[in-house]
Image (cartoon, rainbow, N blue to C red; front, side):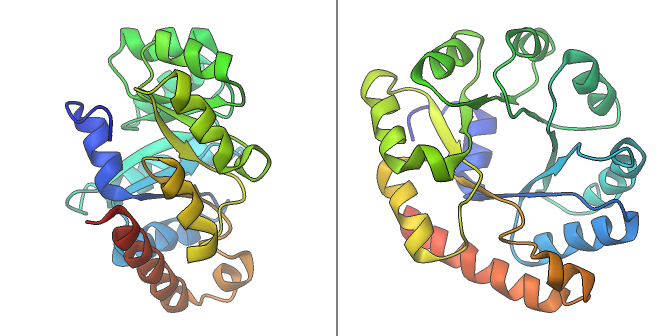
Length: 221
């Protein structure tokens, strides 16, 4: 870990895994949050990928307030106006699929942690210049762990989280941590659509526990 002084980076480092999820059914969203927490998750990102998202987020925030140690952020944010909407509802950090300088400037001026999506060394550099401590490399299945090493060769201080195609298995996760990522992001790989629809949340919680233990061992915690 290259920047141990930041509370946000410390939190993300300790978390190891950040689930990424959304469901237009509020009750399922709440159950997914509850299941993630039960499985050991302490940082979670709800994505803004449906018209229902702004209406559902306050319910998640209310539930998260009853979960000690949990940080709840909002993802799929492109513009400052979207960030402002969810920050007013209690989002603790902003995640973006792209590197929009205007969003970075907005988050910096409001002292809000911002995780922009980057696909090149130049984008990572620009994000760092705008104050980002952690960048998302996306889509990770295309960029690969070798990209992480290439970034750290020239930008050794930036922290990285890969999302998009990271599977909940040792074979998939280990190369990322070996390459030097701070944590990993997972979406449908953790919350399989079929299991969610069938209400098999106990099975989902157990799989999350296995992933968390795997990451803990890989990070040497």
